[in-house]
Image (cartoon, rainbow, N blue to C red; front, side, top):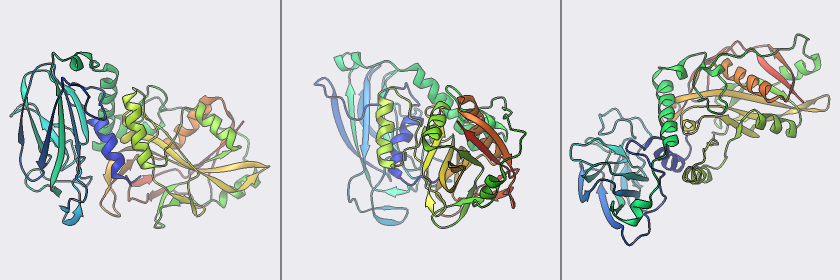
Length: 425
């Protein structure tokens, strides 16, 4: 899946990875209070650290927000008429950065001249632990991806103000989820831990289980009776793989559901699958609002792929809160152009995102999938079985099965080629 909207990453990434200091539930705007002190700055992305001159004291509450000026005419990657983005650039950057875990060019800060840098991006709220001074900069060393200015607003509520004293304490549950999310991402990105293990996709990502964590594999209750010959003939006619908008072949069709739309929706809901959002901008707003309300956002959009000449009818996903940006079980569903005994047939393509990698078509950032894609097929089947909405399951090996291929973005995968056929009740 390619991130098609920078707006979505700009809004959600600070929520997932930007809590390096004492974490707070971030506020969308500076607090309105006569006891809070507002400061505005223009941070030059080509300059090193800017000393804001803001003296901070223990227990001060600080809210930092940033935006790119409209129609700035600044240069981004050699292109004019672009604006600088406080979330930074998604492209890979080989230079050593002040904060290597953050995108190049992103707005960062520190609370001491020699202190540790932390990510701000579009917004950050924090509680100061010890006296210090606020420094701001773009995350670059010599050649920033965007040359221009970032407009930054800093609001400080002194420790003895009513605003600071009424601020909520750090949420330990959020801290735990963020820590787990970081571990999931690192495991998938750098090939360490369960997320990179070829058997990890067979884990069920139910409530409280990370998408990417290892769990005992589940043996599916496969029917011993032969699959109906009329249905196998129709399955044989299905395209073996989906394709992107440029007709690049991608993920394999690895499962089929037989049942009405109502049966499919009921089974997937009972199996704890979430319908993916389809609008990037609305999804970003939803992610921010649900986080502020201490809810878990688990419906990150997925890219549009095609089967039967059209994009997916539905996208579903499972993930742990906050880990959804980097790691999730997910699949796409298409209504097939045929029925079986009056029942609707749905073709599905499921994969397990375990991190990020470079899209070999355009060099942009895309999701990295677990190459052992059969694990996601088993995960889908096992989760449906646990829902209690399954009548029977079958494995079927079609002619010319997909066993070793690459997805549309260039990532390799392998399979035994079988399709899991699930009859719903």
